[in-house]
Amino acid sequence: MRIFTALGDLQNTFSALITGQTGISRVTRGFTGIGATIHILNAFQNSSRINPLIDLVLSNLPVLPADTLTITASTKAGIDDLERYVRQKKTSACKTLPQWLTSHVRNRLGLNQPGFAVSAACASSTIALAQGAKAIASGRAQSVLVVCADIVSEFVLRGFDALKALDRRACRPFDQNRAGLSLGEGAAAVHLVGEKIAGKAQSPMAGEVMGWGVACDAVHITAPARDARGLIKAINCALDRAGLPSRDVGAVNAHGTGTVYNDAMELTAFKAVFGDRPLPVYSIKGAVGHTMAAAGAVEAALGLMSLHTGLIPPTVGLEHPDNGALGYVSSELQVLPRKVMVTTNSGFGGINAALVLGLAGSEQ
Amino acid sequence: MNAFITGMGWLTAAGSGRGRGMGRFFSAPEGNVMVPSRKDVFRNRDERFGRMDPFSKVGLAAIAMALEDAGIAGDPWRNRTVGITASTQRGCLGTDVNFFQTVLADDGQWPSPHLFTYTLASCFLGETALRFGLTGPSYILHEEKTFSLAGVRAALLELTDKDAHVMIAGACDLPLPRELLSDLDEYCPGPAGAAFIVVESTPGPESEVYAPIHEKSGAIFVNEAQVRSLDELIIRSQLSDNRLLITDKLE
Image (cartoon, chains in turn orange, cyan):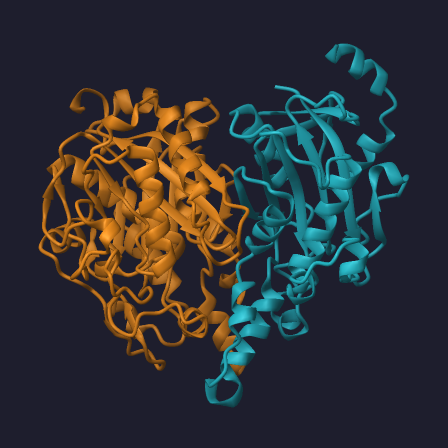
């Protein structure tokens, strides 16, 4: 698995996370705002930043089987090209189409299976991972590559600003004074394989997608259900699929955007599913921002790092925990007590998705 | 695993219709898709419908007709999990352009939050879920072709994997916005419109089955015959004359 965020690659991002660093700062790209951008992408001013961002996670990937199924996820893909086209009619807007990302990945890696691009708002890559895991569990595929990416653009920044969804400073997930999200850009490439390939692999597996669940609130388009019905259903489905009781879960990587209603909804869901036991809950969005469609896979990869190291990153930005978050969310580094975790994401349209992650095979 | 088609509805440049309305479906290659008004879709007041973007209106209208055709619109789902999978080629490109023009206008003072909400192609799935109480897995698949079978294929896999009891599956596309015509015309060929079917893993007692449908190695079969397009799927289902036989099998 590969990721790239404002804090660097997988190893660098995880190291920065556990020491409480943040990649959120002032955006300097011809438009202003606060966000977690990848500085080396600033140089790309006349072509979409989605290309070099994808390159950051695809470069040096080992050769994959040609029949690998490609699943991609992005909310707006190369939306900066559409901005340029509408402004100046200079560059093509074709990279705005999410299916472009699928073709690009397949062509670049020489994969011959037709793939597909999933779009489900901020739960897109969580659902893409679930789709990949399903394809393998059912025997429809033995090798699946999930690639997801989103960039910080004027389009998206102005949109969230217009919705008054952005914190004026770096976001503060689960804080009493949280005031909105911070956007981030990022990408992930996660290779999922079935048991046949895993058994022959030279290097150890990073982890296992043990369960998944997807559910819709059917309550509101932009706001989450206050009773958390969709997220509760998604987590319970994921646990059922994994065949695990909720007591086996050691921690939860929350969506934790820093918006008032999202974070409150999530705490409601976690208490409904896991009861009142003190379960470590954390969000990485105060460090890498909300990477939109990429969030789920970026967080899953970092979650597996937590499972390997036994360390749960502090929730960066948390200063005064919301009353409901006391005993769950911490601004300190925590120890992961078990070798299974849940990661969740929710998005516009009331969509919710959850994954149960564990260490592969005998490592558990 | 066999599933069963129990409803279908569409809205294309050739008109709108439902399977049991004896309408003739075809995804007309030319012509404009008429964006429906609220009265075309819902008898009752719906305050949000008029504010939705055209992509959402067309998609929601086709789904509403499919559900009505299946005889289950407005009914409680009796604890059945219902999801939606839709394919699209052009998604909400028109709304993207319209929103970004509000970013550029007036020195960027007043970007429209309302338009921004609809710059996600998956938004109309949420609008649909909200109106009909659908709580199953819902997502968009971006495809190279319009009226692709990808949504139907995904729906059948959701049913096979028991992640839903009922799926609404199909495709939705509007014509390219005129601002992008010269740029994307060759990337985005194909007719516009929306068509959806209702697929049930186990039809309810009130369900009327058009035809059995299943997926095998990525191919879709209706009544054991492979279909290669959404047009073919809908027409073959409409022509199906063996409902009694299927019902007998079910019993």
